[in-house]
Length: 208
Image (cartoon, rainbow, N blue to C red; front, side):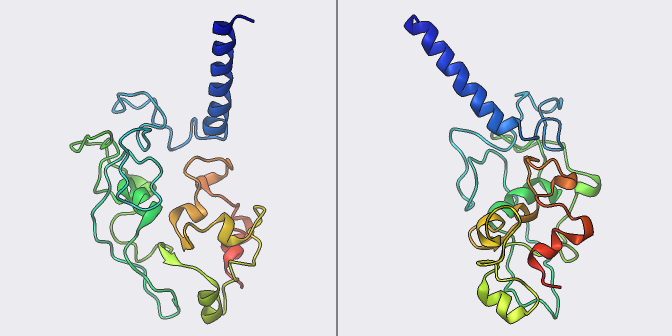
């Protein structure tokens, strides 16, 4: 086989494998597929959130981030039965809120800061998170022991092949992505990572 043809075939093969990994899992056509939106002048699925070059690394666990990051101070969940130490959303949850808090336009990416496309409806969490599941807190064996109604994340099976800690936590913390898969790889409703039929997702961590 001539070298040029071989090289083209190799490149094509790599692209197809990569495409399968990125898009074959379900993001195409999902709520996070912005490729057909009039405000997305790239017509790409990934570019609204990710870039291979000059990514924003100011937030921990940010995967090649390309979107403006919220600087909002949020009202947090609070309860007399909550044993976790709470702080402002961080890591990947702060990235999610950079659209879902409603203060940052969805089209504020690739350096754009004056977009006018904002999240609305059920997807709009707003800046008051006091009635939402808490995020960005450490979930470890110590918390499970003090709480008494949480499984030990270092030993409890997640149902995804490993432990809760290995499969669902990010840097030992509960984040939005602990329950939701933004790339819809599971094809479950509401971008869930685990089905919540009969409260299955909740009961993965909560020992009730």
